[in-house]
View 1 (cartoon, rainbow, N blue to C red):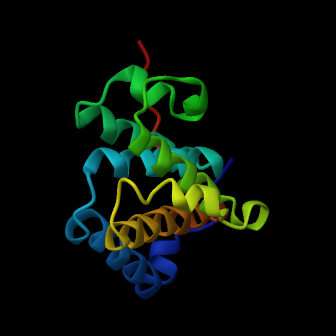
View 2: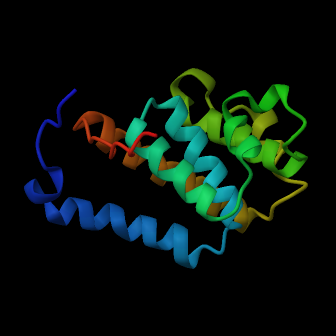
Length: 151
């Protein structure tokens, strides 16, 4: 697969607008960083965005999250590694990422309420939306992740 073109050069203003969302999510929204890793990895997996999966898995490792916790995100429903709060975020991430199929069901929304305020749910929803924007840009323009040195 080859990159289609350099979208950053093609429209710096458009990319700057997405970066403004990212800056809010990562610096101003005060979302638990490990939940951000969780939702970014899961949405990127669903969207098939190798660039973003690679980046966010590496960031999660650098943040000290365990290999098991990272590796099992794709199979979270089958693993006891994730607590109820994480499960609520994962379900909401899947619902919003697949919104055309799910319609964002009430059950997934209601699962958030015991763990998060309305403000926090709004910020989590913006974070999920933002990673979906990045995924669509990276997949759409065929952004290539770096290849690590192999042993």
